[in-house]
Length: 305
Image (cartoon, rainbow, N blue to C red; front, side, top):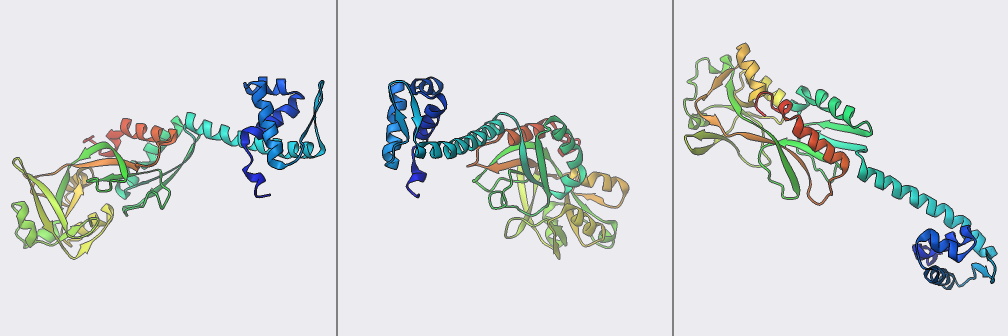
């Protein structure tokens, strides 16, 4: 039994077509092979099993009892394989199937609905599972097709395409600033409590542009939180100075709930990327999604893409 599982698939297909066509010539035409090749393949299959599968006469070819039984089972197996192959071909030709993506909470709350609605209207055969989280997901271990993330690319196992670019705002609440000397230059932040978005590991640095130079300042505080909405709330409650994407911070500054700081020191722009595993070929569904993100980049960082 174990040996039969290793039979040459081409020989099996040749045998099935000989029985279906009732001739070697008919099977050869159907397979697009020389008649001698089909005959040799069937002979190899019989040698492999050590059993006669066909009775050959000058006028006809018919299966033996063993050949008839094998034909029934092999035909069903080949039909299943052909169906599976057609399914793979369809996946490679048209975007379809389940697309698993992950994106930050801030984007999930602001643009996910319109972004997915327009994508799914354009690609009706794609199903989407979107994980909205600020944690660093493992694409391969968690079987994600792609993630959308901001910042620098650190993982060489991922391939990234830049979608948009945004600046950030340094903000604090009027409550926090009351009785405190506001920072006048980036280095002053070292004397303040900051609410930080944690990095991958180690200390947190905020980057600023000072003329043509980029200045990095280490910041720290009582709270590090990996969620922009939560970070915004903590800053509004007076727990420290925070850094928020401009599209999140600007409406809150306009409302008066937060105050913009260090305005003359432009923060180094943060890029938004769509990432996928480098070792994984880009499927039509993922290619279609990436292309859609590029065309809809103006939604990702409103006013800045």
